[in-house]
Image (cartoon, rainbow, N blue to C red; front, side):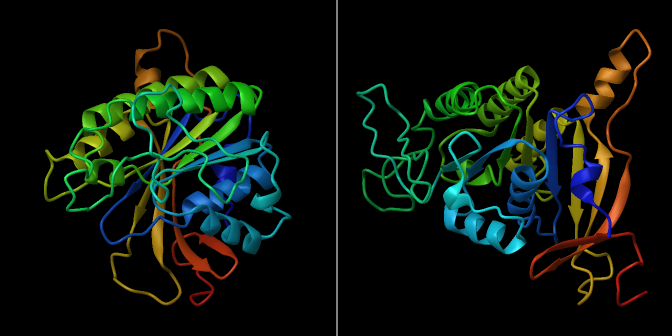
Amino acid sequence: MFDLVAHLKLAPGPDAPSVVTVLQEAGADSAFLPPLLAHAGLSTLGRAVMVISTQQVFLHYALVCRKLGGGVQLMQMPPSQFAFVDALSHLHDHDGDDDDKWAVTPDPTRPTVGYLRGSIGSDSADAVPPNAQPHLLPALVDHVRDTLANRFAGAPALVIVDDWMPLLYTGCCSAVELVSAIRQLRRLMEQTGSVMVTPATPDLADPAGDAAVLARGSADVADTMLVCRGLSTGYSRDVHGQMSVVRGRHRLAAAHLSNGPVVDRGPEPVTLQFKVVDKGVEFFGSGLASAVV
């Protein structure tokens, strides 16, 4: 079985990328990747792990990591190894008058960070209006910087974002602001030897919309791209989708602009098929599913 995590070269070292962008195309579901990579970071990669989640609560990650084995128990992870940012399931009641915009607690079952005043989707006059959180993205970048420098004591980290789209859907920020924050996070990754895994979901029906702007911006900062697609033949019981590892635009641009010889230490481009099973994900070459073999 193909080892995708090893192929991506996420372990600390000169070959590691700064940003891996997961591009999810229509008909595909890459939601299995964030917990899988978080487990790998804590069990085999030797990196501290920070999860910024707008898609799943802490309990989901804890249960998946426990099922994957390897002794990874998120409830028992020391703060110097694991941080979880619960972005949407708990709302922070910051009123803008104090300097503490982030609610940090030692209990991993509660949010490390919460935001969005008001009730999402509420008809109340107090509901969050569009772009009502100008401090949100700068504070998030500051929080990541502080976590890497202090909580992780400068150790190389794996920062995983499972979904940016809820921030756009709720009107917390614009796509341009979000892309700017992602670029700032990339610089943080370069400075600390860390890796960020960030998602992108293009909207082919609206190439000028927020989703398309975010997808292009995320691709521009990527050293490595993971392109997740559905099967061209439709549903299969033995194969759930296919994934391509390709060189990102940032790595290609750096090679093009370099005056001297460039050694490309990134992963070799490859296209795989995958199947999500009870205790993990199986990756294999096209036509090499167990049912075919």
